[in-house]
Image (cartoon, rainbow over all chains, first blue to last red; front, side, top):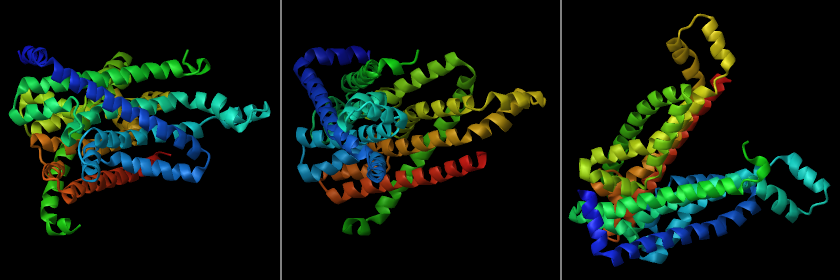
Length: 215
Length: 206
């Protein structure tokens, strides 16, 4: 019954629904893209020095304990409300898992493999590009997958600081106790999160070098 | 800081509520995960199903999950606790099952050879040896639940999130900071103390 009413709400307000959906996807995708663009190169640079790596991982782990809502709320007094502050907060949220996984994955690359590559006359950059990164890719992608799900979930909370997205239907649904409206926000948000998880799980499989796939 | 000094009682009450709802959820989820995890450790199909279902629950965005439960259980603490239990099952079931599976076959065989029956093997051999891994799962779940519980304030479950939501609606940053930093400190404290337990258990097992 509620589901039917939720469906009728979407049919009655297609513009509002698709706007919110588009904002949600744009916000999540942009935040994830930015986080990858920052965390991946930084992780590659830090992985070489043991001490810097340890500091970065510790900092990222503490950052992880900050609740998503707190990050969004704390950005507001500084940057105000809207899309850009939400984007900033969600990017911050996505950094730790990608950074941690990049650094640990690169550190765990078999030293013998790197030695063999060096022995074949590869330069430092070639070793990174042709040996270390491909071998570390599955673990790096596991981090990106975690970050993707976190960002899509976090984007639901962006509604509190005026970031738009599907969370808008949930907050107004709770405020007015309009149950169908809750589902209009909650069900698509859930499907998006699960879709992101599946998508990146699949990419993770594709990007695993053929020699490393479980047979 | 000034606000915190004058309103520490308000923060203490919120902290107390936060601890109660987080730990209730973790305790319920732990009991369920122990039962499901033990079963899953012995049966590959149960393991796959349990991970698939709990993994699905884990992926649902917190606020969406709370919203989906409103038509069924309404607002308040029960809703929040159901949501947090569902959220932490995956982490703990996985660790209980893998912890038990990693117990060397020879050890279990030896215990059987000594005439222990399956329940004794479980309580005297498998669970003690799997304990470090189980506690590691408990640790991740506790930290996650503490930060998820912040959102639960929105559906009147109380806790530190109340301060953050009040801060947002009054555009009053000190209140947001107080809520955020206190919940962060709680998560770090829980993480460190469980890490200590885990380290001690590993040391004892080795």
